[in-house]
Length: 493
Ligand code: NDP
Image 1 (spheres, rainbow, N blue to C red):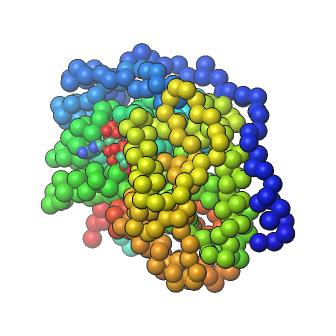
Image 2: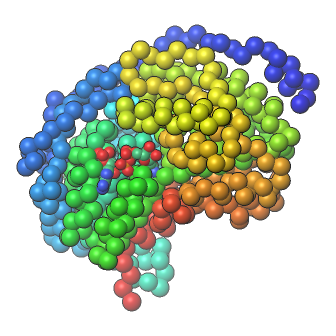
Image 3: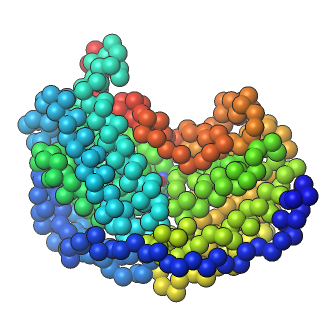
């Protein structure tokens, strides 16, 4: 430790920064009392007759009633998508398809504040993130794939790309609008039609997206949104008239879908869980690395499949890194997602909060040491403080299982080889981070890490041009980039 670091270590942790609240107005969002299913370009009553409320996780108050599709509803949506595919969408000039995608991208940019507020209301994520990350990236995905729509033969030279047909897409609640963009944009660019099921806790931005589809004059049936719970998702992926299944969510449901799809000839992409290692070497710029650790695990309350939830610190810098990390954690503000000062918003649902609480209790029972900075949690809503565990053995549940919350486990290593061994000691393989001054070491590590994405001296950085996806239990197939088009195409000989 340098003298400066020793002084910093002894100085008191700032207990609370007082900020006047800077709450984003929710007036820009106009909610309906009830939402039905979006099929064939229109909102239609669910044949199931079932509606359920969607709640604001920061207040536990209902925002609106949303239809829960049954098997029959799913069938009607798939039929609408099939008709749209056969009767035009697959045959229109690719430049025309691009035109619709560009329109969607532009409208998303124009209405991004409305979407960001709604995303934070329904999902609990801080407005700074939905405003500065989710929405700009969602629009960027549509722009990016609009550019490819009329250049598919250049994307895949010497092959003749053709659309598959109807794509069934099931998305989770952690990045509702961004996951919609990741799925819908490449599917349409490749000439497919879509039936998409959002998560039942975060359906509202997908339903607002229906308005964007109309504004962009996308032909009816090209995109259909069926809301509902896991039952609707299960019916959708099993529907016999679906050609392609794309799923993001838990490994457990991913395996179930893989079993259901096996032998049917449907193309499948699975983007599942993760337990990423964020690896800090002793020559890393430590203050920058601490920001990377914070961003890696507390972004979106840690409800991120690629969250840097296992911190691997080289033994010689363990103490200064921990001291800096704890000081930084004490400055994080937990609270109202619509307040622009908020760093950590609400946990998406009561079930998810219970899961986090249970795993944190398991960590304490197994013998890990817990640190949570002093912070006041709001009285209502589902919140969890930023948490770090030290003294963690690799076998502990908190080091093995995906917590999907603002909880970090710290382990140490001495050599690069040991870092690789520990980083790869997980059933998952989605992402990893490496912090070091040496470019050669970054490359050495990246070659050996069994992770689909490796960030160097940064973390949680996304770009539509860069493929994303996993190894092992984190799934297969890539989303983003040219690679993200391939799962939506077949190639004629
Ligand atoms: P799920 O895998 O259950 O949910 C993901 C999506 O799949 C949702 O739209 C869900 O619907 C739907 N679904 C649920 N069951 C089925 C099924 N049998 N067939 C088809 N679709 C289905 O995740 P959870 O919300 O239950 O979260 C549990 C854990 O999964 C989290 O704690 C986290 O560890 C992990 N997870 C990983 C994500 C990632 O980005 N990789 C995202 C979300 C969760 P509905 O939500 O309406 O029930």
